[in-house]
Image (tube, rainbow, N blue to C red; front, side):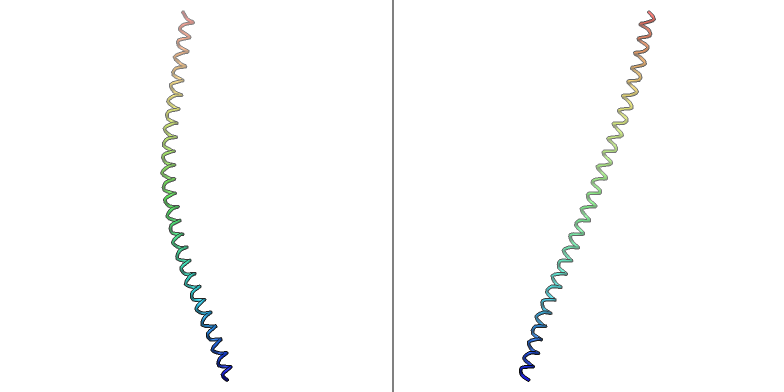
Length: 96
């Protein structure tokens, strides 16, 4: 009988020890999940900031391209005007 009780007590001690290990593992798991959620939130915040910065930068680039396009159109118009004037001058010089 004493041997049987000793065995039952040994099993109980083993089960108690294993339960303590499981609880410690669960606490560590919960801690890891909390850290993961925090990292995920920080990543989302960083992505939002990056998106905002990219949109701002792309808007600036768009305005610069529009300005360059306007400048090219002005230069093209001036070249056409100069060509017309050169043709007039050439026609006048040939008429003389």
